[in-house]
Length: 376
Image (cartoon, rainbow, N blue to C red):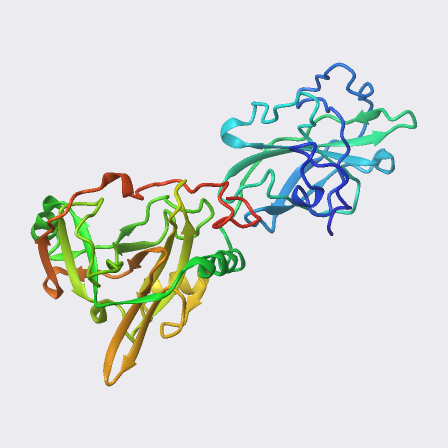
């Protein structure tokens, strides 16, 4: 069942309670650490014999919540009024994450039937490893607490964004996507050595590789989806791809219908910025029934290829016509190998603008345009 209502925010004395833990009751007190040491004026009484939680179980993990349960001896169980939950990021579990020394560093929940749900994006981020330990406590009439020893320390990792979270990102991206511009080719820039290597070692076919960790930290495609990155943006005055690129002076161009057609599915993958005014939208094109298609079907919102705000393929007068959004930078991932013979490779005349590269770029967590109310 859910834990009772939240009373006090954990991270900031001024942060809204509902943003910390949904249905969790906290009391602003200073708790003893896992070794039983108390700070001055802590309000914790000398330790008496209360049951120590053991066999802790973590379940129903999402990007910003989890359920926790444990076992404990029946002795003195009826004296338990509260649970103290010590939650820390695994990589930095001993550091004080709060600027003000009087802000509590533990979750304090009223004793309720287990399992209970811990929910709050203020202190839970997606795809992050945490440690958790639990104490039982009995609140005395004078306000002091009698506590048990700490339980064993359990480790767990929060989940990626769900389709629900990605749909929220999708809706925010739609707001700024702008009007649609016509285009006819997808293109991919790399160094000359890349294309030479493809010809020599991969039989002329570019191979999918695992997507890097750029974009939203909770994106389910980062570090998991295999694909090949393409662009489709065009210059407003020419209707053609720009002559500059951050990724290399050699460009592979391929007719749009070779990659995006009625035999492919289109998915929304991410929406982010890198502390800049312009924003990126990641889309995935997967041949119907391919491994990439199956991966995306389970994790990403599918778009109508003929009617969406980012990338469309429509038949007009017996021909396929393509449009892309003007006001966002589209990064398109194609999930199958692509043979170089299907297009052309040529050197561009513009510059290599390294400052525009998004390789492993981190998302701006403070941007109100492209963030949602869960871990970033």
